[in-house]
Image (tube, rainbow, N blue to C red; front, top):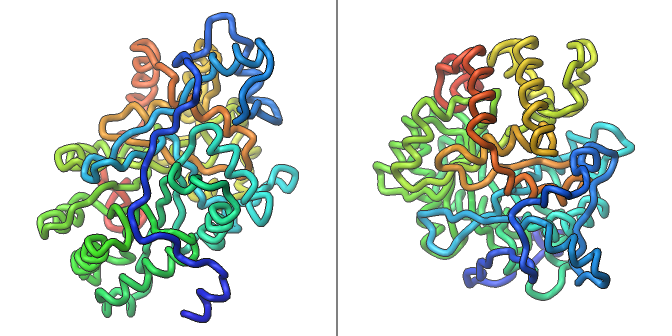
Length: 410
């Protein structure tokens, strides 16, 4: 392992906790576009999106545009004082190598992937989410950090995951094995992670509480700043917290198509100060204008994420119901001069206990839209229109990630 890490050429930088700062632009800005702003909807749905410049405006029109640009808000992880995340988080599963999709728009690997991080940071998306099994994602983040300007690391929040999949690893889990897993992630990232999120492959090998306690010991030793979990259910999370493990976050699938967190998980986390970090918010892009009015035969499942989320449509209400949902979202999007995706994501972002939503991206074409999404205000009529469609679908019955594990209904 030491030779492998050395070959990566990435040294773990700094043992002390990084200073976490809020992303703020040096201008007085409004929280939303003015009424006479240009039609953002047409720009955001086009082949490219306007990217915000990090340099100071040189003309009065540029200054006015900068003043109108919304600022990315941040939210705290209550159980870790001083640690905040941007309310839109860059998900890096798309950098795993399995999400290339259309070659014309693919920027998920190599130099292009590294270059695209800047566009997200300039838009205020300062939190990145990776994992030990996301192919080269951690290495790409490490390359970006290594090439960045002085002070870049202090502006960012780097999250990753330690996942124990195999039966031998679960049966023999130890403090040493957990420390090694975290150290490997840190070496690939080139930095100490701000949040390590823990996943366990099978409840049939019930040593996940031991593993969580080992990770908590490593956290106390300064190996990383916050300990979270991903894809656990309420019962297993309660066993961890009852054993004295303080959890900062819970990364879980949550969207208009998947409301299982509302079957007890959201309240459990609220009661314990555990921030929700939803993924699958746009169902791999299925909640977008691209599929409005599209027949089932035209839906091309050309990425892993689309293949993952497409079956959820059937569980949530079926294809005709899904189209009804898209029509309702489209009406709201037109009202606010935005996109279906922004409305769908903001609905999740407004749910109780949600600190930030994780949005994967194959390129940076919509990076500048992230603060627009975060500052979008859905009114009571919007929420009522969405609730009406949801009520016509199928109410989920299961707890988080039990269906995927074969342990219960959706």
